[in-house]
Length: 122
Image: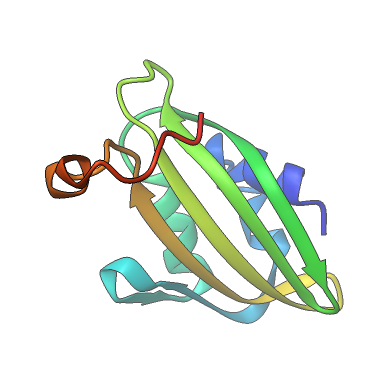
């Protein structure tokens, strides 16, 4: 599966194309919000989410039938940003399971800043 095409279709909310990436009985899990979706539910949740979105793949890994992506996602006005870490278990070039972890990007918390440890990545 081409992760670039998948993420382009996710971010552009391509309702017609998204189901074609999945096995019919695929399971999608958003662990940070404790939600599990069927393919139809995932497409609806993704495509009905408010706003217009863009993003960039920052990293991909592949190990056998497992694909992993790290994607930075942001609204077109760049008013916020998020990171999605996604684990794609594949079967015959289609997604069998997708486990995703979404996080808001932001500053380190004040308590860690007070400790004087760490430094910005970029």
